[in-house]
Image 1 (cartoon, rainbow, N blue to C red):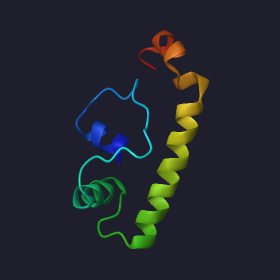
Image 2 (cartoon, rainbow, N blue to C red):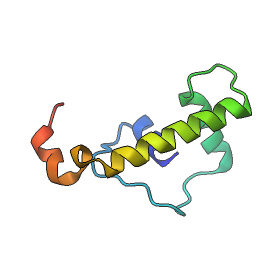
Image 3 (cartoon, rainbow, N blue to C red):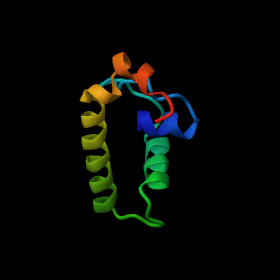
Image 4 (tube, helix red, strand yellow):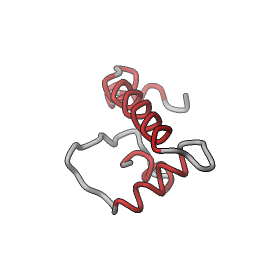
Length: 79
């Protein structure tokens, strides 16, 4: 949710890192955001669950990737 909200606001995500336990927004806002980005017009709870698990897995991998680290990020601008 933290990534999706920032993406929707067109914020730079290059230096953002997820912080577990940080609460942002309301449950209603979170659900609306997830429904907007999941790619289904009327998603079931299972589809939302699968979407959030997949997104979480991908973002964890991205945060741990050397190619997405701030150290190399400046060298790969525009890619």
